[in-house]
Length: 54
Image (cartoon, rainbow, N blue to C red; front, top):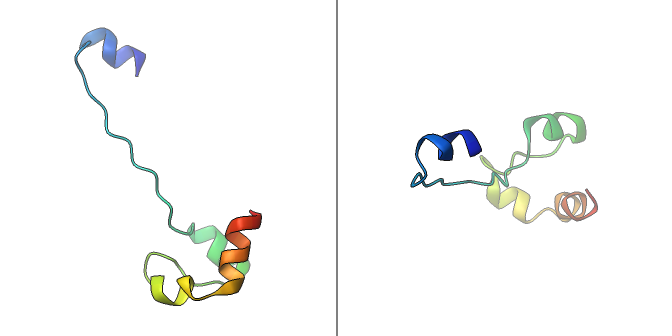
């Protein structure tokens, strides 16, 4: 960002944080994808525990 601001000090940035379950996590854990199956994932106590525990 520093290099961009050096060229244009008035530049503005937008950042997004992707909270969807990573594809690799689904493959390893055998869980549903939170982007495509949000209803199923939100109801899953196993998925919620994994997200809390990391």
